[in-house]
Structure formats: structure tokens, C-alpha cells
Length: 265
Picture (tube, one colour):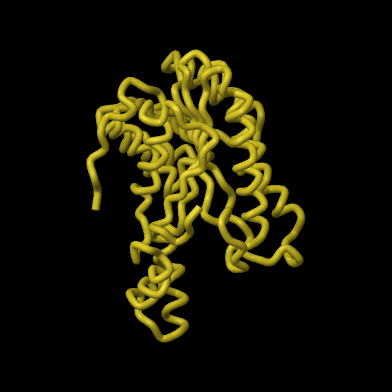
């Protein structure tokens, strides 16, 4: 079910990092539907062009900037391009992540743990620092896209992922304290499993290995949710839009769980 987004971000400029095929693309399009012009950052130029086209089809402007956010020079070029194109930035959405190794910590290579920290945490800090001056001018906000892995220690998710996402939450809270006096808010959204093609394939594979149908596999996973369903990427994105908007102008240092009731916090 797709609900029309009110113009929560009308007249604003939003930077979205990690514009991949999952939540990143949805975030970009939902921001545009909410009235924002969108700066798109990811490594693959061809994919960025596709997302930029989807943004422009809503009537908003898009700027696609191929960026490896772990590269300081590329991150600086992203910030400069955004300000050159639009003259302001009102919100930064740090969505980039690296696929975590789904292994126990005793079996996870240290380099894989470092990479998770580099992409999820250090790059988010780098971008937040680069956009601080612009966000100060607009009295804007930062939203960190986190994960429900914060709320559990399931072996299937891998400890390296929880380490990185826990550090990202601490980063967001620290920045909320440090940047708050400058009028900048910093919040987090922690989505649970979303009904994407990747999750569909994963659940379908597990279900098939047990002689179950995809629907039976879905129902088994959804049984842990109060709402008995998995949320869509749009539902997770809309929580980000709220925190980036002026409706949340008194909210900072907060982590909003979006998981259909899988965990209460």
C-alpha cells in the first residue's frame, strides 16, 4: 500500500547517501514526493541516473553525484557539488552501509569488521562534519539510518553488524549533543526486516529448504511482529521523512524503531 506523502519537506534540499536499490532509492523518491530537491550519492553512476530520473518525475530536482563516501576527497566534492547546485542543504540522510558478514565474531575477519565501521560510522561522521556549516545556516537535521539489530543479538545477523550499528547510534547521540546548540538536530531510525526482493528471496530460500511455501515462511517470520507483517521500505522511509521535517523540530538524539512491533524500546 502506497500512501501519498504530504509536502513535509517542501522547499528543502536533502542529501541522501547510500542510494542503493533498497531503502536508499525509496528514501530519495519519498523525499522528492514530500517536496524536497534531492542530492543523490552512491558509487554507481548508472544507477544514480536511474534514481535521479525517478526523483525528477515527481517534479523535484535531482543532483546525482557518484561518490565513494569512504574517500575524503570524494566526500568533500559531494558537499561542494550540493552547495554549488542548490546553495543550501536542509537535511542529511546517512543511509550507506556495507553488507555485513553473517558470521560469528570468532569467525569474522578483522578487516570485515573494520570495513563496516568505515562505511557505517566513519563515513557518516565525515559527511556530517562536511555538511555542518550548511545545516547550521538552515537549522537543519541529520538522520542516521540504523537497524533493529540494536535491539537483539541474534547470531544470524552477525556481531560485526551490531558493532557498527551500535557505534552509529552513539555517533548520532553525541552529534545531537554537540550540534544542538547550533540548531542542528540528529536522530536515528532503526528499521526491522523490510519486505524487499532481497528479504523475499532470503525467506523463500529458507522456506523451500524446509518444504514450506513462501507465504508459510513469511507468516512464520511475521508471527514475531505485533502487526503480524513486515513493513515496506516506504514505511521505513516515511519515519525518516518525519524526523527530517519541521514536524520533529523539537526531537533530537532520538532513535525511532520501525519494526511492526517486533521489539519494543
